Amino acid sequence: MEWFEELDQWTASYLPDLEMTAEEPMSRHTSFRIGGPARRMAFPKRPEQVVLLVDFARQCGARPLVIGNGTNLLCPDRGLDRLVIDLSAGLTELEEGQESGTIRAACGVPLARLASFVCDLGLTGLEFAHGIPGTLGGALAMNAGAYGGEMCQVVERVHVLFPDEGIRLLTGEEMNFRYRGSLLTDRPDAVALDAVVRLTPGDKEAIRAQMRELMGRRKASQPLEYPSAGSTFKRPAGHFAGTLIDQCGLKGLTVGGAQVSEKHAGFVINRGGATCADVLALMEQVRQRVLDATGVTLEPEARIVE
Image (cartoon, rainbow, N blue to C red; front, side, top):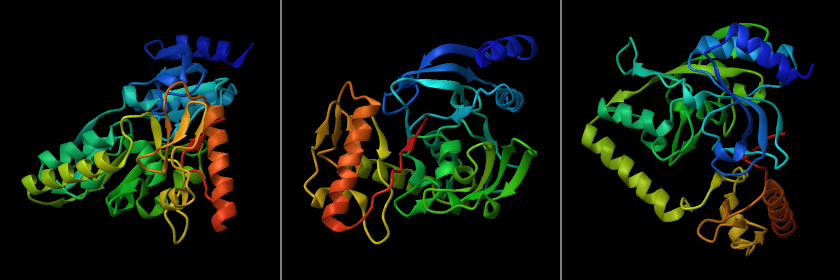
């Protein structure tokens, strides 16, 4: 019996109310709008569904991949022979915490919604997150940041599901946050379920004004009108990836439907019909030409899924 047949039987018996689809195009679930069909995709509504599903998926060889909005993913054209678990559909609870200045949010909550929520409460510290398109879970994994702010500055604790230990409550320090990484990138088999962030009181109108300013800066400098996975490469020590790519004259470089944005060289965009193969070939050209010209090796920030 194939793993997906075994999974179908198990979910019908033990999680009959779980929404699950077959051969679901990943292009519908990634901001790049790229990717072939996932063998199975599940849309849990409750944390206990995630716990049970992840556990059984590993037992039957489904190789679970947990995603949010798919804003940092590049998925293969051939599709994924694995179970994709989408937290953004149902794990979206958001509420004030028990302690003053704290907010508890499930990991499927969009960062933009979280930033707006705390703004309405007059809490400052998440203005930088307003324009980041991912979910809280992805932001925790990558220690998402912009304009001088990072998730590590506000995260107090996180419930994380580990395959062999169950759910543990980790402090922000135990999450091992660093530039575009965390314990969750070290342990891709672990799943963040929810988090508590601690913020400070501020002036609601001033917070809202800063959010508008940062969003304006994003729109002016980034190619938000095209599908992409955000910044394509990590920032090399002592440099900016986009500046290096621009200095090498690579703006507008195109492979198939993929292009180095003419607006911001740090973004590879899908101008229409781009495939995963197009993006990977373009990324390799950029990496090699920057290395040849500057001696700097660019590393992908977008997560390349297999």
